[in-house]
Length: 268
Image (cartoon, rainbow, N blue to C red):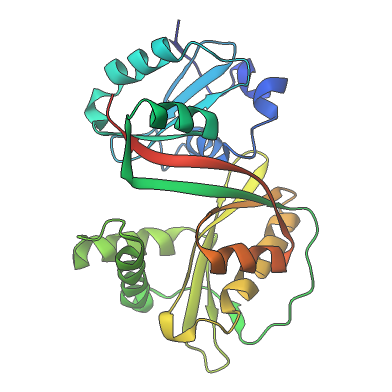
């Protein structure tokens, strides 16, 4: 039923997938980024389901059209094909999450509902400070921000200093990563753009705790959104649906909530 497919498979251009392409931008980012994800696993039934995974550390992303109904076979395929991911991290539509939750398969301690936002027109935002690139010497500053973020969200909470430094260096190496500096020149916020064929997705938006409430993240997101428009792509982003500051910040820039997806762990 499920067979290996390539990025140029027609299902990615189908009307069914097109309705959800924005919400499944992460899937597109994986299959489009040959440098970061050189050997993604891509499977489909060539009709109304696509499954993508890059490695055992990342979620198995599952797109299903509204017409899809053969969940028993889908779950069996995921269980057998991605056994190295156990316990499974899944990203899917809400209806599949609800189904697994009702089957008592979801780890309730590790669930995140993501709001899907897109921007068609920017609102005016007044800047204080300025956008800038990051220097190699500032790697420890970015690493500390990642460490604080992990502690606040509970993700990778046991990450070591060396792991945070490695993540910071990877962040800095992305030419579409950006920092926002306060008027005094201090790094107060960071964010990056990830590209797919049609979209520019803003992510990793972090503000140092003592500088929050000053709209620095909003300024940086505004600046990066302008950059995405200049790239002739559709700006979009995901946010923690339960995190109120984000859900206030992005609409203030010009983003509209267009849907939700679920990111969670399951035991199949």
